[in-house]
Image (cartoon, rainbow, N blue to C red):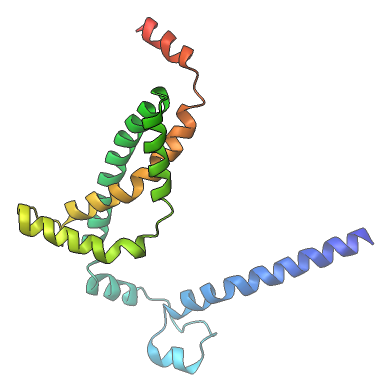
Length: 179
C-alpha cells in the first residue's frame, strides 16, 4: 500500500512538473519557427533549426550594448553596496547605543516601502538634481547606479548586521593584537 501511494504521489508530481514546464517548451520550440509554421501548429517541431531569428532579435535590440550597460550598473552598484554597507553595519553593531539602534531601525523600515511608490517622486528629484546642480542623473548610468545603491543598501546593512553581530568582539581584539 505504501509503495502504491508513493508511486501515485510521484506520478502526480511528475504530471505537475510537465504542466509547469509546458509553456517553456512552447516558447523554445516556437523560437525556431517562422510565423507560418507557428500558425500551422504551435506544438509541432520546427521544420529546420536555425538561429537566424535569435541573430535578428539580438541585432534589433542591440543586445551587447544593453548587456554591457547592465554589467556596468550591476558591478558598480554591488561594489559600492558591499563596501559601504559592511562599514555601516560594523559601526552600527559595535557602537551599541540608541542612535545606532535608531539608524538600524530606519534602515530596516525602508525595506518595507515598495519601489513603485517612490518611483515617480524619485524621478522628479533626479530631474531637480540635474537642473539645480548640473549633475546629469536622468538617462545616465551613474544615476542608475546611485539609485541602485540607495535601494540596495538597507538590505545589505540588514544582512551584514546579522552576520557581524555573531562575531565576538574578542575575536576582533585578538586580530588587532596580532596585527
